[in-house]
Image 1: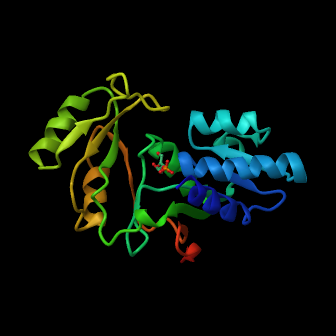
Image 2: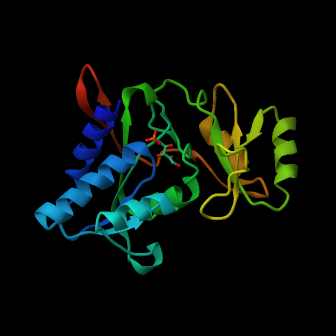
Length: 224
Ligand code: 5RP
C-alpha cells in the first residue's frame, strides 16, 4: 500500500514545474507528493511556493525546505494535489478523513488545477461507505448533532486516540455521518450547506478534473 501511495505521489509531482504556486494536500498519500517535491527542491533546485492545507503538512513542508506562503498572500494557486477517501464514477469525492477538509476545500477552490491521488480501493460506484465528515463550529454542535440524528444520518462526534473530541486546525469539531450510501451527493451537499452551525462538509462534488489512481496490478492510471 505504501508503495502505491508513493507511486501516485511521485506521478503527481511531475505536473509541478518551476515557478508554480502549489497547494499541498493532507494525509498519508499527499505526504508522498510533498516528500517528492521536497526532494526536487533539494536535489534539482525546483523553485516553488507551497500553500498548505493543514498544520501537519505545513510542518512536513518546512522540514523539507519548501517555501510556504499563506493563501491570502498569493494571487492564485496553480495546482493543488491532495488525497481523497472515496471517489465515485462522476469524480465526486469524500474528503476529510484527516480532519483537514475545510482548509482543503478552500485551497482547492482557489486553485487553477486540482488533482487527487488515491489507490484503486477508493474508487467506488456510490459514495457513502466511508463516513462523511462534517466540520461544525463548537457552539451548538450538540444541536447540530441531534438534527443529524433526526434526519437519520447516524452521526458520530469524532474523537482522537485518547478519546478527546477532535479540534480541527480551524478550531472546530468534526461530526462523521454514517450514511452507508449517498444516493444524491448534490442534494446532500445543498442540505449541509444550508445547515446553520456547519462550517463545511467533506463532499467535494465536481471539483476535480483529474485523478491519479494506483493499483498493485496495473500501476498508475490517470482518470479525467
Ligand atoms: C484529509 C483528507 C485526506 O486527503 C484523505 O483522508 C485521504 O487520506 P489518506 O491519503 O491518508 O488515505 O481528506 O482531511
